[in-house]
Image (tube, rainbow, N blue to C red):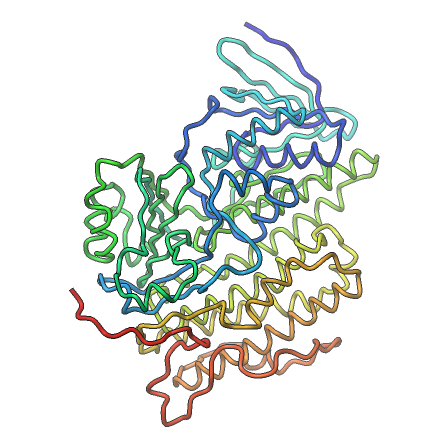
Length: 568
């Protein structure tokens, strides 16, 4: 049977996280816009939905709670995240006797652990409430794109035994890895980051705080709620995650470099449990009595990929995993949804104003891919050092400083689409990007020579004043152009100083730097000298040379030392 035909301003293929948030953003920007969302799944979807991507970080969290105005839902129906936390616990059960990276208290800017089923059901209801047309159980059958600036695109879908069609000014692909437009237009692009993932949900909380009864270890955090963190259990070539969900379930995953941990050793629940018994025995112990509470299991091979183009002046775009995907280690998925949706909304705004969007779409695509390349560098060829309790803490501090100091400032300050202002900061932004690539190369060289000493300390990010202030600065009111330029130049200076300290520390460990470009990069003169950076050490309290063998990852640690305990 043939159903009704529609005419609308925008059709969004995919009613998951990316598509529904885009629909809300479009309706928020334009009261009169006609948006149709086509979602393949029947709604409502189950809680603890069979998806990965529960952990958000600052950009994505700000997009949800502030840009889209969803804070009441985030505060009442989701969990506030206690930051990232990392443990070097490979082969060990004594989690209180290993190096831990994390904050001892909540930092200023919130992020969330998101139950995707709860969230996507709410987003669909909210979209309908705001006037979005939402068709679930809709299977897209055909898409016809036009290059005529005055003609609409056409789309056809089935729902039950009826076929429907629509004409639309814009078509956006948000249908995840199915990538309908990507396949149709031949836009798929591989990258060199070859990593696999498996994950599952258990229908009960996993309280990592109960893994030790050591009072000193428990007292390091206030609140005593490590379980609310995105917990990373780290080893060479892999990390395992623990993420709590508001539904009461707990998400567990393994992300691994296949050169060190092949997928066929972890691609079923039983194999994963055997793997945990060897590599993370304390987690195995916590899960062993919960096998009957297993809710699902999935895996993805070579999950990271790029895309040749995500925004087009011919009025189509891709967002979320329909475009590109990086790596879950720092949970950037919702960040890239926030950025791509913001670019798409701005392109629609220019089109509705009667202006050509060809040049703007091309520039947005270049900038978005630049963000992708910079973020990919945090992960590519870095997995072997994930088991290094001396180098990974340095990497985490650097990666955060780069993220909060540059990309987060651009988004929080609402400058993502300010092409003229970003163009005036081209030298600083490119310098920071080159610094990041050079530091990542240095970290790999350093870890290859590291002694990997695993001291029983908390590398307390909250005890680093500059670090906590960088996070807090994201809450500042919108700066004028001069103030924003000063902010980015201050971030550039801060990153240069931090890079210099990392270089000095690597050299102190007699690291063979090889052809690392960082030393010469730090000697470069910039046409607009960055603002003065921090006074004093950013990374660690300097140790006398003759005490170098005692060097710990002491970023002003909060560590009344924990009394050693026999390893089980």
